[in-house]
Image (tube, rainbow, N blue to C red; front, side, top):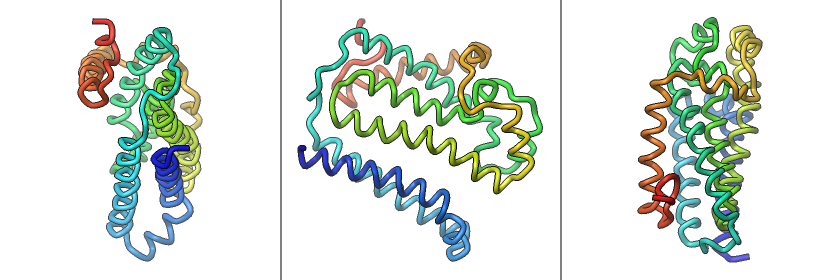
Amino acid sequence: MDQALVSLLAASIAFVGTHFALSHPLRAPLVGALGDGGFMGLYSIVAAGCMAWMYFAFTAAPGADLGGSGEIGWVIATILTLPALVLFLGSLRGNPALPAPGAGALTQQEPSGVMAVTRHPMMWGFALWALSHIILFWSWRTMIVAGAILVLALVGAKMQDRKKEALMGAAWQEWEAKTTYWPRWGKLAGAGLGLWIVAAAAWAGISYWHLSAAGIPAGIWRWL
């Protein structure tokens, strides 16, 4: 295997592994030793370091070294990225999983918007993004990064449930009873017209930027 790909694989494993370790078994003892601020500083440094390692290894690795899935792959990937953005953007408001004041009160509400789809909309947004790139079967470097993000998103969501149960107790258990881990895709259309419009605009903009960022036309711009 190419040395840069080995480095990228190691960086991706480190990124996912340190995220899981710092978010779960090491969090309590490190917060006890460093305090909340010190822990967040350490967490940010480790995450930034792993992401920088991934970036430089990714840019050094060869691109377009797999066969690709052709036009049908691009169609599926293009379709998947729109609901991915709907889920991600919708998760930024009214989400009790986010570490923000008032999270406990949010669990008392009836789930609406993307929360009616899944209690982990951000994670599933990342998962759909990862799947869209895996489906393209474009390069080993893309498969490695997308695979890491997919594991981080879907395994991380399950681990987040356990962490929130410990931190929030009955409030999170009540939220779990009203929501689902697996998305109820039929409810995505009801996420809100405004959210869909914002997501569609972001989807078009990000797809357009993809050409300058990666040198590959993506989304609707591939056919325009």
